[in-house]
Length: 251
Image (cartoon, rainbow, N blue to C red):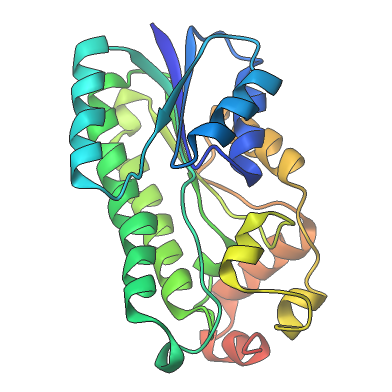
């Protein structure tokens, strides 16, 4: 059984990943998020091939244990794994809720790592792991300190794992968009006027980002960054001291 697995599938680019998977030769698409009703609604609306709704919080050790058991029982061939679940919070760390910062690390880092590790035994030549990363992985982002740190982890994780899996012909790709008009901004508390940076940055299109990101992954690329503006920013991050770029984005 050939399948795709998508975490964070109930909104934003996760929905676009699900839509793109309808074009692949798969037996099932497994969608994961906490909101069962939302997942079912998306699957009924866009699903053309068989799907499986797995409503769960992937930061729960018990849920991860159940996920591992399900894979063991079904023994599928995972052709695509989308590590898309994640969130960010905007604001200075000295004024932040420490529990929320910890939850961010749990979801963006630990859960992604564990889901990938659980899934790898079911992946073979030609499979793709696609990690939703961010331009925040290029340079630390003041006022989103923990979020940008988690995305730096995702970038490092992607590059190193890709190197490990090169002999098995399994590719790992980080998709690094800028801001997108999705629920992410609402959850992060980034309303219009809160951040001059977010108010002025060009926005990425979730549909185009998903489509081109998957294409890049299938071509064996390590990093996909949409829009020329952010490709240039990625280059600057390699050339200039991060302190300069951090100062420019501190608001």
